[in-house]
Image 1 (cartoon, rainbow over the protein chains, first blue to last red):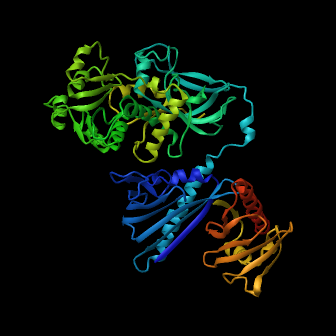
Image 2: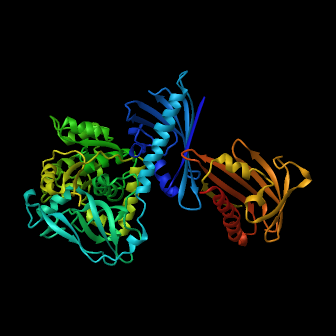
Image 3: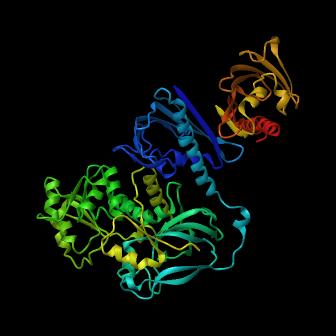
Length: 489
Length: 145
């Protein structure tokens, strides 16, 4: 039997280190040896018995099972179930302890295992250095870098405006209206924060703002409702943010397509360690949308059948993953076999494609004639009548967008055919107070942490190419999220 | 039951620090609060079950019994038999763990005891800050930290 123990001291509070380590399925986000981690179906990341599948950076594959986890002791144990690296009967333990005279953390990582004869030393070194010490170094770099700056920087009273640029429109119209303008972010007043933004989300609601379909802004001005970046400074009375903190937001007022911005601090949330800025800009607005659609507009219950249009799109991927985890039967309605593959990977039990049969006929076949209990439809003009026809009795049609065009006037009496409920929620009304934002982001971050939601890397455009990003989104040629990256100052 | 936990990092290998702290009769050599110590009945200081009697610098007197000692784990557990502090069922453990990426040591000192509820905060502070952290500070001065 070989025994390996390695330990270190990390200059970060124990709760912060534990928050990263306890995500059994999140080690690919920080450990350089792990290229990809995926949980086997049906278990959560902190559920005892969960099995993670690692693709190692070296090319090998590995399956490991979570044996025990204690938030009280800040300790977990796991074992290798199957490995292309010859480590047999491998059981490891990760343990954190606070260093109470300061805010540091003692971290020990140990294991026992057998190896093929003669390879003990080589494999013990691989585990000790390639896994444990490499992990210490990676997490140290990550957590110690995000340490707050010195108080001297924090209390400096800035008076100058911070220069930057933004993608703005002068009048409502097509994507060609978007152009770059210089902007300045003034020093933050009471209750305000000033941000240097590093990633900006592109959403369909931005298209509606650009065309004037939603009057959430009046030109001239920049578009955008979602971004992530770093706090430059905060105004009087702001307690939850401090300079250097990584933050994000997804909310009105419109104006996020900018490299610098001064805004109301209460709508800005600190990002958890599991979320880098590009991913935050890709997932905040769409994830908050999925949260209120599945938990507030309609409280989805286990056993319900849900139909999701555009299941391979930004919001669609999140709706399908989350609905699946909530125990619903998920049907995705999409247009191509490639998007159907993505939909299935996101938890769709069934996918319907355009064919000889209408959408409603396919849904009725899949549900034994019942129809769908809830339908999330952001397609609009082309889908509305099909959605009503695909609803189960007393079903709920949630119309939250009109990518194919305005739905137009409809006869309310037609809803009586199945005693349908119709909702037309607006993101702004679910996210316009700090209390609402805090409640929604808390559940969203928990779903990201425990692996309920996995986000594919967003497609990046420079901020200067915002018009191109809008064209790609409107053409329906994208899967997953789009983000804009301001050039470094 | 009150629980007190304190920990620190010392700038020397665990075996060097253990050589000093494992001596159940050696507190006056390193802890600033202890003036004198002797082992009752002339027993060896590493005999499990032996009793040390100290005098504190502030004049108080204590008797403590060694319950467990492990050179393998760098760990020592003892109980208070008599003290002026007014605690009951007091059991404490001092433990060292090597920090493998450098010649450093993680030191933990913890205790559990019973006392009247209105004295819990005062006693927890006295033990955690005075006894345990006071000891760490003295060891840091000697070994670095």
